[in-house]
Length: 317
Ligand SMILES: Nc1nc2c(ncn2[C@@H]2O[C@H](COP(=O)(O)OP(=O)(O)OP(=O)(O)O)[C@@H](O)[C@H]2O)c(=O)[nH]1
Ligand SMILES: [Mg+2]
Image (cartoon, rainbow, N blue to C red):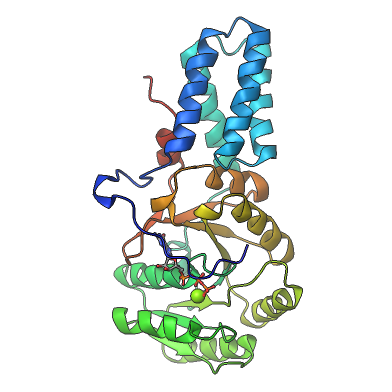
C-alpha cells in the first residue's frame, strides 16, 4: 500500500497520443468482447460465457469486481429486453453505460469555482508517493496561468524532506510556499497559512498533507483536525493509477473517513490497464477532476468523460 516516491519512467513519450496515451489493456478487452459478442447476440448460452469472460478480463484491467458485475448485468438486461441486436447497438449501449456512470458522479471545476471565494482553499489527501506534492505544484502553475495568485502550504510536518520538496517546487516555479517546522501541528500551520494568505491577497491556498497510510487512524484524526480548522472549500484525493485496486480501496477509505469532493488520478502516462478512473467513480460516486500525465508542470490535464470513453471503445461509426 505504502509506496514511497516511486519514480516512473516515461514510456516512449514521443509516441503518446492524446490525453490518455496508453490504456491499451482495457481498450483491447472492450474491442475483443465487442467482436466476439456481436457474432453471438442471438445465442444466449454462448453469449453468457462470453460475458463471463468479459467480466474477468475487465477485472484484470483494474475494473473493480462490483463495477464489472454492474456492467455485465446492465448489458444482460438490455439484451433480454431486445435492445441490443447488432454491434452498433452493443457499442452504443456500452457508451451510454460508461458515460452515465461518470455523469452521475457530477462534475467539479476547481478553476471556475475559485472565482467565488478569496482565498479558495483546497486540501489534498492521499497515501505516500501518489503524487500529491507534484500535483499541487502543477495546479499552482495552472492557477497562476489563469491569473490567480496561489500559495502552496507545506502541512506535511511528518516526513523528513517533505517541506523541502515543496520549497524546491516553489523555487523552480517562483510560487510562494508557506512552511512550518518539522513536528509542528499541521492544523496550526494551516491556520497560520490561511491568515497569511488573507492578509497578503492570495487567491488560492493549496494545502499539502503528509502521505497517509490509510490504515493509520491517528493520522486520519490529525487530518480531520486540519480540515476542521482550515475549513477548505474542497478536499481532493490524489491516487496513483499504477496502484490499481489499491487506488480504489484508498478512494473508499478516504471518502468514508474524511469525505472526498473530487479525485485526481496521477501517472496515467505510464498506465496500461485503464480501469482505475471508472472503478473509482463507481465506488465513491465522486468525479475525477484531473489526470497527471507526466512529471513536468504542464502535465496535468482536465479529465474528459468523452475522451476517456472514446479512448476505450472502438469507433465504429
Ligand atoms: N510519470 C508520472 N510521474 C508522476 C506523476 N505525478 C507524480 N509523479 C512522480 O511521482 C513521484 C512521487 O510524487 P510526489 O509528488 O512526491 O508524491 P507525494 O504524494 O507528495 O509523496 P509523499 O509526500 O511521500 O506522500 C515523483 O517522482 C513524481 O515526479 C505523473 O502524473 N506521471
Ligand atoms: Mg509530498
